[in-house]
Length: 390
Image 1 (cartoon, rainbow, N blue to C red):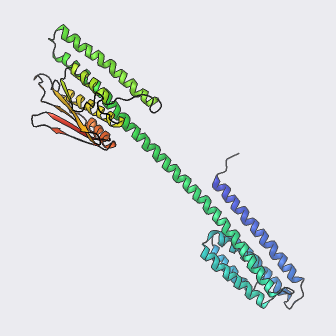
Image 2 (image 1 turned 180 degrees about the vertical axis):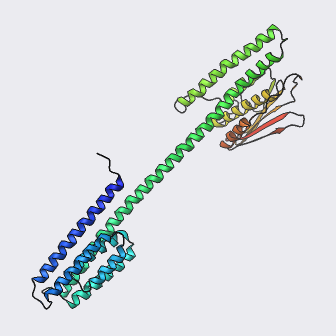
Image 3 (image 1 turned 90 degrees about the vertical axis):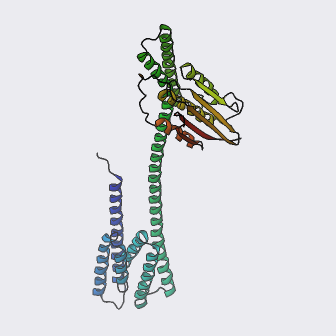
């Protein structure tokens, strides 16, 4: 057995409703004609049969009530001015208008229908029923039909609105998920670049030194090999830490901050790049409290700047300046001089700029800024200014 789609079920349901209303209208029309034939009156029998034929034709027109609701209702209301048998079909058409059309159109056709019924019963009053009772019955019947149709319309509009909201919510959820994935990838790319770039640059410098200085003493070779081994081991540790942060619950594993900057500088100094730290307010030794997010951004700034200095100016002295005041700002600057590179050592390849872009993004995220450029002495300077709440 095949599955039936929602549209197919709705189509079958609509056909069933149309058939039910058609049968009801035909049955009521036949009963009305039969009642008229059994009542004594001035109307000849052939007129009643003609009225029945008109009523059945009106019932047949109900099959087009969904396609032409207003035109069909207006036509049947006009027929009701002289045909009693068309009244049931006219009420069904009025119900359809209440379901599918606006309130203004519905009320207009309702008033027209009441006027048509009034004209009919004005010329052919119902024997034994006072006029005021007939008016009450007509108004009550029309009100019930119109209210039922408008209730159905309101329910359909509510269902359609809920479906639209669900669809919009689904699209928004998908966009949020895609945006979160994009942000997560950007964050991961920055972390991997900052963490591994620092270690790998040390490996590159010392491996290059071993390759170009083949006349180095055994002690120098052993020291360079030890630096390579140590930084390769630390690179693996850093990679495990990054993966651990990704896998662990939020906030479980600590991230580097200002307290780790001195270790970073000592490590760079031991690797052969002389670094001087000028910390005016003892920020790196815990003399001033720095927010965690700002401190982590400052650490990544120093790390990336030292990596770039070591890569593009190997052996050049580097100065790291950190200063500022709480409730004002915290600024950091890393400046390297012209490298004393021997002529036989090839220049480092041009960078992709990802590191500086990543630093600029980090600074922007915490409300700061980044600037960089060459110095007058031929070196390179990178500065970052961050907010420092009290």
